[in-house]
Image 1 (cartoon, rainbow, N blue to C red):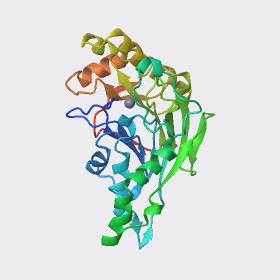
Image 2: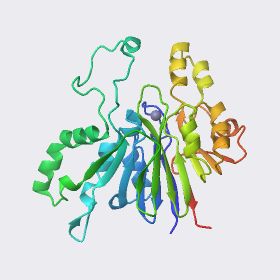
Image 3: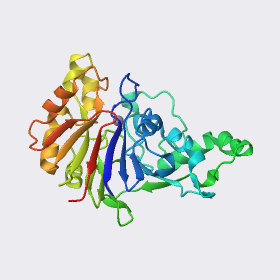
Length: 314
Ligand SMILES: [Zn+2]
């Protein structure tokens, strides 16, 4: 047995870019697959990595921005047909993620919102999202079984909302333990970071966040920290105005800060992901790693789609 980390997609921000898939990462323990976020291209990247949809056990969403959840429907629905073994439906895919926020996000005046989508429930949580995905695809889920043998659609997925207060252990089966903290990502509240502990080691995932003390505590001593990275100076040089830059600074950890986070968390390896700018040609991997690694005494690796790391028991 071993634990394997697979970066399936490493792009940040919603706009698709050529050559890099949206943020999505897998952690595989003993053949069981746990996926963190489902950005653009997640189901294809999952298949390309040789992962089996019948072994998808759970998805952990860091927050509900579309670059993190846009391909969640595909992740659930494309693999539906194989979620059966020996004539019995497999256990539902468990989807963990933020609950509804306790209060409406502020900022209407800032954003001059013209139209509120779904004013009855303008800030849905993970269970609402899953419910809406199933409702939106009801035609497929109800009609396809008339023409093909399919597992019970009602056994496809279960939502598990993560409520504050945090930190908390949100999953623990004796082998895999997942802990969560709330991080700081602008008005995306709650936004979460996760840490996975298995008998082979530990991997922490920052989600999208500014420098956050709770994340540093969560990641303390982990073998690997997969951390988002942004180069705000690059964005400034390429025409982002000061107001937008200030908003981005309230959303993300800059490349000049991430090494300090890894150092204070005393992790063994920092793996960069969720790049902003996302385009692979914008900044070379060597440049990302060189700048992000400043102030960090461990190993800094510029993540790329398909990168793997194996943790083994010592
Ligand atoms: Zn993001």
